[in-house]
Image (cartoon, rainbow, N blue to C red; front, side):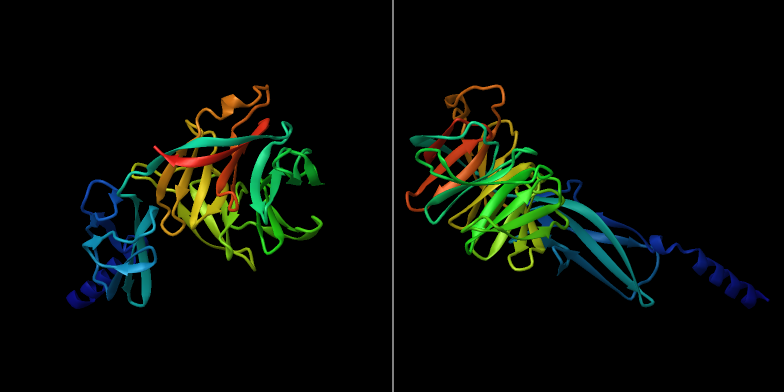
Length: 338
């Protein structure tokens, strides 16, 4: 009877083990959940049962404790533990934040030239391609795709976008123009020669469309969050993302994008100052901050005047062209270190 009772008790005990509580918690030894490159992460688990094997992951890479952050992608991430027992997998995770180990370099600007800009243009995308300037403008019922003579401000070609769409950033590659819309979860591809629509594409995890640029092989898309998504050029699928990260925080509301010499230049929408950040596309590290304070005061001060939101790099002139939503001017500038 004693053995029968003991067997029944063990079976009852086993049935009472909550599979979600197969182990109590994932323990991170440090009280802080914020780390920098070079810091050490020490961790362990508190288990209530025996297990067959256990694996720890960060950035989809198997790691062991203690773990030193070295060449990781920056930003918010998950430390994940997978415990295997009786052919089943049980998982727990803890959030950690990895910041840059160095401050961004600070830059200012020098104005080289001033050119006229359509004051009705709610600028969303701004890009040079083969010496010509192209612009995407927003607002439902006013959205457009344009080719502009940058010296005179004259619109040489324009395609008006259906009023149901609020146009956003553009990028041009292989004689095709890629244009985002804001909240419609759709983007469009046009033939550069005639602005005819080639096809559309849907967003995936990035639910909104803000800024767009390319490195000649892939597209990079901002969605108003801290994330910049890398898109496969042929399928437009989202392959991965980075988070714009400084030594102090992760930046949000990244807007208009420009790819220049292997770096992503991103406008920060409605930030405390009119700044553009320079981001490493591999790690997300914010390597530089360009302070464009004062430019907005140099344009016509109208009621609808809005934020800086136009970055176009002219490789022939080796200069940047900067404008904003409903700005009356485009500024050709040289970036200089403070």
